Length: 75
Image (cartoon, rainbow, N blue to C red):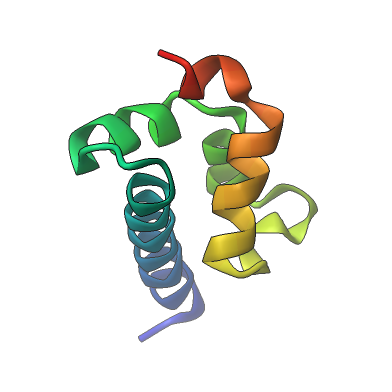
């Protein structure tokens, strides 16, 4: 496998773990957590690889989303 494939697999697994953590932290359905995540600025940063944010722990990233994008959580 080349580096791009490995990076994409890592990112997909990270996104899955963030969504599960977000759902469990806030007692949301997985569908709602997925909707929140994919509409977040955090998702955009992770997908673009900005600032190396994708290498933080999934629990930290879920908490960052909750703390910085409260308008999405309230929906």
